[in-house]
Amino acid sequence: MKKKDIILLGTVFLIALILLGIGLMIKKAPAGDGSGLYVCIYRDGKQFGIYPLNEDNTLQLGSETEGRNSLVIKNRSAYVSEADCPGQDCIHMGRIDESGEEIICLPHKLVIRIEGGEPSMDVTVR
Ligand SMILES: [Zn+2]
Image (tube, rainbow, N blue to C red; front, side):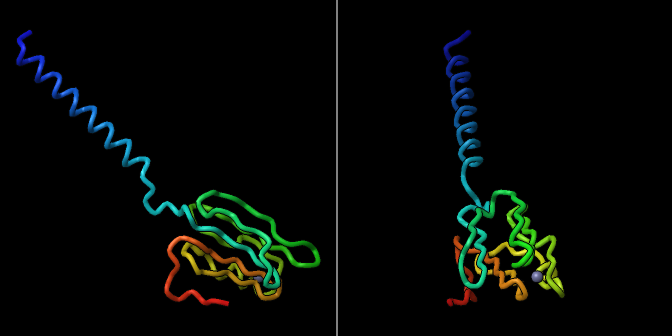
């Protein structure tokens, strides 16, 4: 093997190593993956639960007297899958996935709001 070939081989190896490094860095970099956003749950104006939006979860909220809602956190969005309230408005509100968005269940005095991250301009301060 000539000296030139060794240098060439070394250069190729180095470039491969750098590319691998860049690839790993890109994989690790958080890019809008919903981290920093939380699903905050309020009943009667009082917060009683907070869950990260980027972790899939199914929550059974409430009781026989308060009313029941099933909250699903999936694929960085949250929605009510089941409820025993009349009207089922909270189910019809569908998915929320941005800071400041809310699902409200009036009969159960339940508010599910996404907080954190970059707040939207139309966030209402209470
Ligand atoms: Zn409801």
